[in-house]
Image 1 (cartoon, helix red, strand yellow):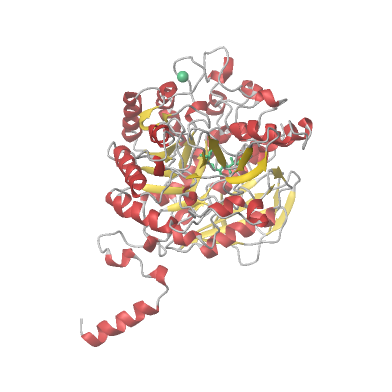
Image 2: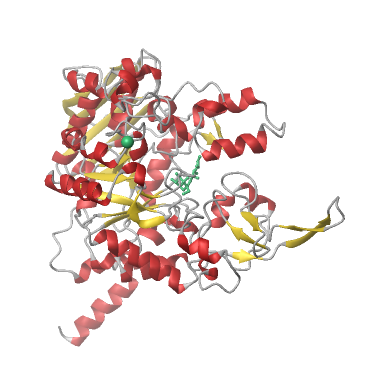
Length: 599
Ligand code: TEU
Ligand code: CA
């Protein structure tokens, strides 16, 4: 290339925003761009999250296990999902149901053996699906041998695998002895201080989550090498990637200054984006992910939409995508539920479309093992509207921009559980909050339980409802680890699979539609009516492929007049059996969802 032309090209490239000069420009072997996007399997996938403890118990001990997951692979394949995200399956004392790992290279005894895992992975691959596993490396279990060693003495070789600090001098105790206070005012996500005093060496250790979940010190290169090594262990077995637990929290300010009052109120944001977070993610990518064809999705607690491209941009070489918490928490006021407001969530999806361009891929999800049930939270789980509203939500999740993540049981329209008292709960987050708020008299038990019925993580952790037999077909045990929702007699997979008009079959049709039309994957997104409080109407367009999705997020019938420029060609799907072509004003039933092909 003549030097003058080369100079011109270099000047032009320098003028382009950073994000548009991505690695793809130098990768001629890559398939042609689609609407500016680099086509990739994890962008075209539909992901299904399995929480193994609650999915299927194969040996009658009341606890879901890996052979149980394997026994349901045909069910998942028929649904049409491509990727399974398996919540932690590693050896753990289960202080936080597996998110407290004791041995990263060992399968949890209750879940089975490594041979069981290998059989699951082989079964996934045989069905041309993929498996991603949960990488929980912000913290370990306090029973991990690194921590068992670390707490032994201040000069133990593993001491700096974790954060140990002297306490601050506290008031003289009633016994006249001096007391100490935690090194700073960091709160734990699970109530109380994030610091635990350990008398063996008279120091405190950091735990953003449970006392039994000490935070790893990522500033220690030995810790980072240990993590990269365990990642390779699973990738070399053939897993297809990782969901990374609270990954934005891995870098801390080693001085641990006190949080300001506002930071205390939003401590999740304060803990994220530490001084070396990006350095460590880029090092992890360089040392591990870049050497495999894998998918990574970060659970991006504390990361704003504006900060998202810095973690997922093609040219950043960190992660492929992240879970932002904006949509799923759009109806929360702290730990409480607040009224759902459709324009709020519509604005969030439009903001995503604006902020995340062709170089920063998005995710779409409204449920997981940390949140209450989808249809009870964003739909209407009354007998009249549970089915149509569950189908409407599936329609939205499977036609928006970004890789959709479905959570086990949502394809059945499983609902929140009718919790009665604290004894019904398993979640350490609930138990700690009960001690900190009810037993101290701050909150009444009745108010506490009433709020949890709508917000508790245990809502999504009740066992999968497979059929109308005892325990919903989840387990032959007398008492599963967590009670099965009593509505399993009507709401279960067997009934759903048998009913051609079920949520399961409707979801399967939506997945097939998404797989058949790249407009739903790589197409442009446009909200036709951001201000409408009941109707969510948007288009997905890619060249000649143009679709209109219309959702009535209310239980009442709604008339909606399409903008004049929207020319309907044919009705593709309706969740309530509407047929025929309607133009101009659409008369939608309560919770009706329609997908039209446009001219
Ligand atoms: O969740 C982090 C997180 O965001 C949760 O603490 C959530 O905000 C809270 O529980 C809402 O009620 C991840 C895992 O998904 C969660 O299951 C673990 O408990 C946590 O990290 C610690 O590993
Ligand atoms: Ca079992």
